[in-house]
Length: 188
Image (tube, rainbow, N blue to C red; front, top):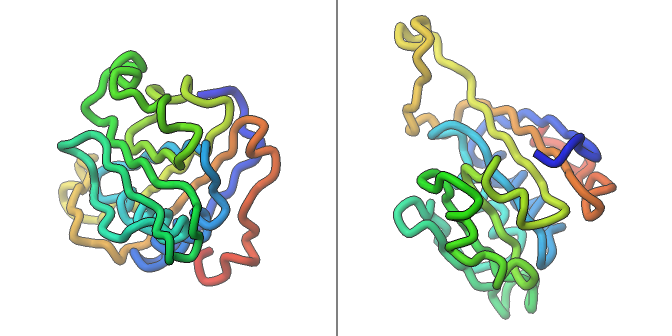
């Protein structure tokens, strides 16, 4: 990572709807050039959170995980809530092993004019910007026999179980926390 964060915010959400709403609140304050790194196991809500970010940014709906294509670009809607706002570049870095492979997909060409969200990006994309938001999504382990044996439950059908979302701001762009817990009532 990039040293110590400027600030840290931990929120509890109870459903996929609240995860989406938190993403939308954050998306509303993002600007061109912002980099967001998403971390969380399968089913933690990374794509749901990104769908919310897209809504807050005012980009075209239909955000899905870019697992097999690596990168998807979602254009800003001229008649949306933020006309003229930045496009969203959504990256899945799960199958990329190094910063060099990230460089090969040429994100530097769009970084200044878009908001870039990278799932599984920790340890791979920090070199792209001097400021970033690091978002960790955690879902609780179930009390199933598999969880009792220490095996993580990757069942992605439980969208409405509670999650803890930890957001950390790094670098000069994020000297101030953009979201206030009072403004997120219902999401904390």
